[in-house]
Image (spheres, rainbow, N blue to C red):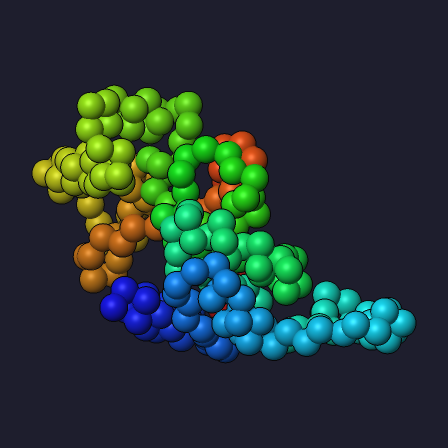
Length: 219
């Protein structure tokens, strides 16, 4: 199923980048069914004794939480906006609100949402541009058409740009073009790879995140 495929692809890419998936859980059914896997995933332990909890927090290392596990750097959710509205409050309840939480581009509805604010995602520049060139082209392309397919409309424009560069004999390994579906980079093998832009949901329009700093070359 989709969840299995997404998890396998995510684990493989993490290994390629030198990381690892420490743990995972599946969720399904109603909102009440989401609580148990999230609490289990985070190894959450309730502490009713306020004095003991205060002592544990005072002695905890900076950036750690005494009521949940602390051996991870981020959380990735595979769910659209509807599911994220139910999952995100539970992650906050179980003390994961300070950790970066990512979702797929399906969480991006293109408008502000208090219930989704704080979730990060990566999407095509075409979908993240509100008032610029891409935004105007997207509005034109989707007029009278299904907005659910908006991400696919820009692929034709990117293909045209690539074809034009190839026709001019101007496409070479390590070349980079700003495309509507992402930053198009030509690999050493001649294949074109697409890099998405990342943003964070807010109560207004999504806020673009700064791209990661380039790694320094090895001496």
